[in-house]
Length: 200
Image 1 (cartoon, helix red, strand yellow):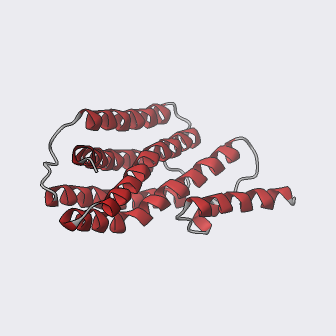
Image 2 (tube, rainbow, N blue to C red):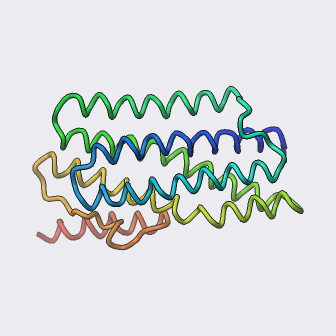
């Protein structure tokens, strides 16, 4: 395994979590649905913990969390752009539309975040000794929560859009009700939703 690229992954993972704190803070301010707002508040708290986990893992591996890399700068730029997108939507004055934009921004951010942790898990399996131990401990602590963040918010985004179109929506979404934490579970929840409406 290429150590330099593993280090870059960790720097990007740290920056993703730092940006995630800002993204969730803004998303909460855009929340209208009380269940979704409560969920995002919980995810903000978890993301704050994930940032700590990555930082401590980096320190264990002898990496300076303050070091800048080109990839880290790109991740920061994308995170700030997502926050600005939510600010724009909020200023436009339609609270329901701003909530949909916030949900989309969370899904975009969580797609990168989810990938980071998937790769950290793969790196943990390919590592040895203290490196393997540190990466595995971090991955085990965070992975399930990252799955929930992505799959649940994807469900919310879909249903909020459906509602905005004037079509029957399922709120909270099936992903939430079934506590989905895998891609297969998300696909099954979505399929169950489609079957529910195809019978009507």
